[in-house]
Image (tube, one colour):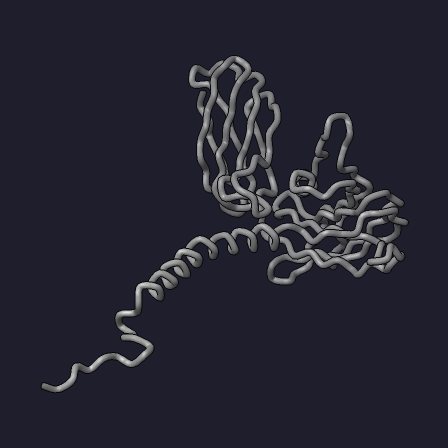
Length: 257
């Protein structure tokens, strides 16, 4: 009888030993768990603006250009300089929304200067001395906001020259909410809240705008296109909630209470 043929010392590749199979399973689990985690970390870190060195800023001129996604210069676009004393996600959201973020009785952001772009998209901001760092925001209205953190301080706290800033703005979404009563009575006062369901600055569902209104109209500009949840509540108790998918440009929404 011929001798039984056995696989070489390394084993049958089609049927690896149990220990090898276990290692393969563990590796697969690691990939399934690790890849989404790495992707999430990548999304969060790459979408957050780069950090600028904190310290005693001497002030000076901040120069730059603002263009659209095709490289065409944008005229009459608002450019603002903010002073920041902390660098957290909430502060950055506030910077991009163009509002102050309140921390008790202390503002963590302070508007220092503003200007509008010239016909060639250029701008020049004169910023005062400040203890902290500078945040430069461009956009608003029909354009999404863009933001950079800058500092006049180098690695050893030496004063350095700022490079001109280049902003590329994408078209923004405008949400026009028309609030009415079914019985035709006056709407009166109420509150609204709009939450980005697709996330903002790499973070999950985020409330971008909230506040009070009186009358029938709520207009929110410079929003990134995407899916939003809109909540409207009157002081008399009537409330409305809807999910909307905002496209670049005007997006009307009729609310009947």
